[in-house]
Image (tube, rainbow, N blue to C red; front, side, top):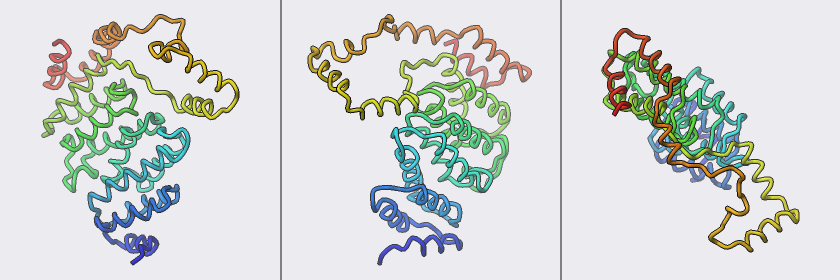
Length: 307
């Protein structure tokens, strides 16, 4: 029997479920021609909103399909445009906040899979998880609304998000992210928090103070410029590759892209990054001073950094 998307969508909007078998049929429908349009992606959002219940296979498919459209649907591939970032936010915000596990997983997967994200989407994703933790209401709670507590699922989502490749820095925790960790810590200080939360707080803030990476991804604009350059068929491109052919393999790209600046000393940079600077210490002192005394999370952080 041929899958009729319109009939299926009407049934779901009337309060139907999305089963694993339904998801398999949707996979064939979505990639019948190898492409997913914005209209198709929007239709998936609508299914996710109206479904009475969904199978885990649906969450995997939904995130995979929408990520594919947003990240690889336009040039340069691998990046999320400002336009698409705002579209994702608008789709999720139609009901006021993240309402499903699929939407929450989508935000995290976009940060994990893309080369870079617009800041508006980075901050939105962080804000949505923080709201769930502080309110005690959201798809990670399964009907058990308890304020001031960090669950295991929330700690794991936060870890994935702040250390994601397309976050504020590859495996680097930003000041905004460290501030968020302190806000959650203060709000959930007396809560029955998952064991993963203390480890995340300590490692996340310590990474902000001492973390280092030698890798900086190209911006979306720069990637577009390079793709345009490589598509150019002027004689200059031919001379470029002929020059490459004349090079000794041991020289490689170094001769072509030789920089007048001195080479980076990555080891020295990493050692310097481990030192907590005066501004960083000032920020940490201010964050700790918001409460009287030093709590166990802050003490664990201090011991970790000092060690």
